[in-house]
Amino acid sequence: MKQNSKSLLVLLALSFLLSGARTPQQLVSPKPEAPIVSVTSEKLKGSVVRIVGLLGTKVQSGSGFFVAQNEIVTNIHVVAHRGPIFAKLVNKETVWAVEGVTAYDVKNDLVVLKITGEGTPLPLGDSDAVRRGETISVVGFPRGRYKVVTGTVLNTRNSDRRIRTTADTVTGNSGGPLLNSKGQVIGIHVARDEAIPSNALKALLSQSTQVEPIEQWHKRKLIRAYAYFMLGKTKFAAKDYDNGMIDLDKAIQMNPELIYAYYGRG
Image (tube, rainbow, N blue to C red; front, side, top):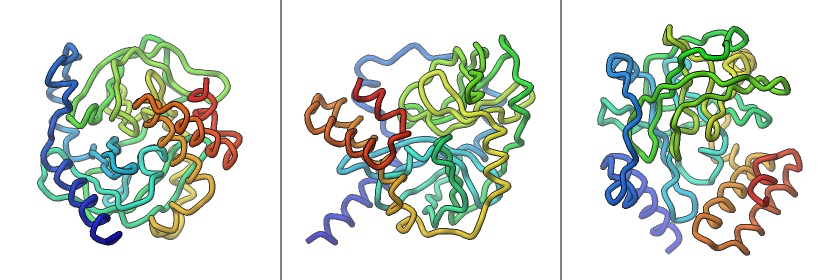
């Protein structure tokens, strides 16, 4: 029975990924479209992927991009939940499975994944050269739909060099690239108006090791902390506050430095 249920959930993830379905919120009350960079968007369709898995019984969707022919990067919180993970380009019908992890950075919420397909790697820029007022683009799959939005740099935090922008991003943008006017990745979108600096990704790529199977990686304590954080966040969104708080507390117990969980409790 458990095996049948698991198979049904995997099929659900695949069908949702391929369908490109809109959420009820989009159908009823769509937000105004942000500026679309059409030329850049076409060029990027071979590099930016939608990432899909299952968080409990709900579809968990995020973004990622190629850093090597068969490797993509995204946020840990996008893929921390147990179960199979899939990736797909918007301009191809093929759905790729994630085989495993070659590198990850818990502090910066970054993970490099090996997949069963190939794409075009994006060039990495120097995030230390980012300046306030600079024009940027965020590429990803907000609410499951491919989109490029523009904005400007507000500032960079002194503590961790995270980049804050004016780009209008929503659920699903996590893990997508933040690009400068040259088309170089200067950040990885992580939350609301924030992006992890590309130089943190460069450091991570230099530490890449042998592939760790995704099933094994999911069992790591610090990764499970991210999974509990996402479960708690999902339950809060469903107004199940008591159980959501329990999950956030578990996340903090497993990783007291996971600041997202503290924000969630607040």
